Length: 199
Image 1 (tube, rainbow, N blue to C red):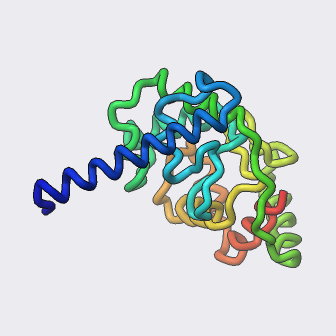
Image 2 (spheres, rainbow, N blue to C red):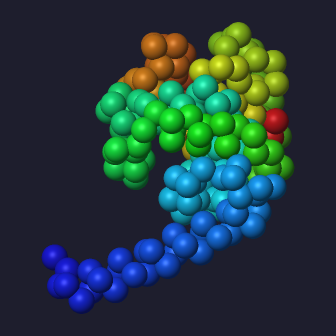
């Protein structure tokens, strides 16, 4: 347990960091009004424009607004759990969630810096074709409505989500992804991640 002095110092540092991030967001956006206030908190993990520096976090830039909005709702309702995200959405209004979803959907997805293994990517494409992934995620894996964009997503994040669907640690998918992931081997998951990260 922290003493009062440590707690106050930590709080001042957090507030200073949030102010700096907020200033950076305002400077990087085309207009300050385009940046939702809650985006300052999101930027700590997801980057100022939805492009994280850590591969474990998902790229939000260019994601479908409907998908982002529903994920925030699911985190808040406990249908999807994450030790970082779940506390972040406590008390967030639906309007705030929609504003965040719209903001990140309008950002340009980055060019992926991770270079996948070409042989594994070829096997990943074959597995994607076999499991009919494009029926939901579309041909370019750009997503639609509540189906996420997975093209160019971070490799580590793709692997983690497929593993979580397979193990049923994540089940907020109406059964579609848990069903598909249950058929995947560990090698299939790695191959699919190598394929998707390069799209």
